[in-house]
Image (cartoon, rainbow, N blue to C red; front, side, top):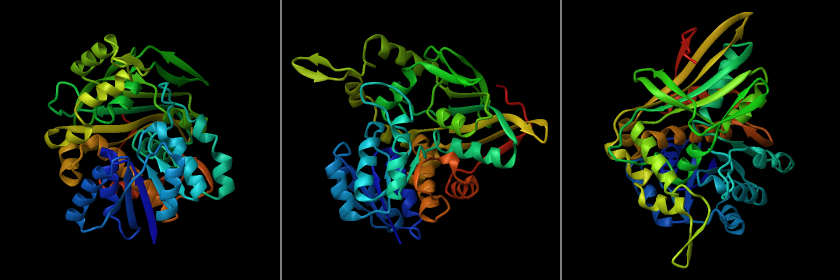
Amino acid sequence: MSKVLVIGAGGVGTVVVHKLAQNTEVFTEIMLASRTKSKCDVVAEDVKKRYGVEIKTAKVDADNVPELVALFKEFQPKLVINVALPYQDLTIMDACLEAGCNYLDTANYEPLDEAKFEYSWQWAYQDKFKEAGLTAILGCGFDPGQTGVYTAYAAKHYFDEIHYLDIVDCNAGDHHHAFATNFNPEINIREITQKGRFYENGQWIETGSLEIHQPINYPEIGPKESYLLYHEELESLVKNFPTIKRARFWMTFGQEYLTHLRVIQNIGMARIDEIDYNGQKIVPIQFLKAVLPNPQDLGENYDGWTSIGCRIRGIKDGKERTYYVYNNCSHKAAYEETGMQGVSYTTGVPAMTGAYMFLTGKWSGAGVFNVEEFDPDPFMEKVAASGLPWHEIIDGDLEL
């Protein structure tokens, strides 16, 4: 009998609640909370129609620790799933500690005033969660999340040492808008416009934003121009797999998207600092978010597929081996099942799966953990059965 509380009623939160409702043998009571309760009510109504499962809803400000604590103490969830904004990770973790709840999120903390991926703020909670006898699971989406589990699975079954890791993320879908982001526009644009960074021979090497790129072939999709970005899972993976000599993250972007992005930057709409407008303080990127298409509304006409995976090279029994593990996800199938597009789906399914692992005792321990620190096998089995089947290519050409 496990209660679970989801914070955030966006596209990912919607998928998470759908998936929780498909597993009521474990998730016996489900609550969805957000700053706007009416958004939660819409999700709850849809889930009730599809599965006959009652979802409780609540209004909560995820920036307000006392408000969060009051809700947690009232509902008493065993696990809080945070799919709100990355800025709110620490307030939700603080509330979990005060209320005695376990914690899971899909993206690492970012300060509001700086676009920066870094786990240090959340890793600093290690002693607090350990002393409280509570578990905090960080980065349990797809990337970060499933990519970390993929790496752990490769290390367990295929390698004595992992030397080279490339995470490749392709969205080959078409949402038929001139410009739209697949998740929160503010977070998405901050992520893409920061400097690139990759790990090599014990140090981090910085590049210009989208400076390094090359075509990569994706299964069932073909070649897509792929750009080197910095992504948070690289930080934890090189820490937890110290034999890694080089780790990089690649993501595809179409030329039209990049043209719009360049214009947005050039005219100052990607700024994250406040400006004065007619006596009011506004943040340009937050205003931009308000006028762009809502990622939750993209699914209905979204064609094509995502393809995300890990390309790994290393040593097994003294011989070089390559290994590519990936998932391809249909935007259309994701929408038909949950009403959301594939990017939300590929983040929400692993979040539910991580919650399932914890609440069934497959993943356990007091403290703060990244997903690759747990046994990957039960996760891989459950995530495949839950809508994200994975595929392997052993000793193939990694291209990278």
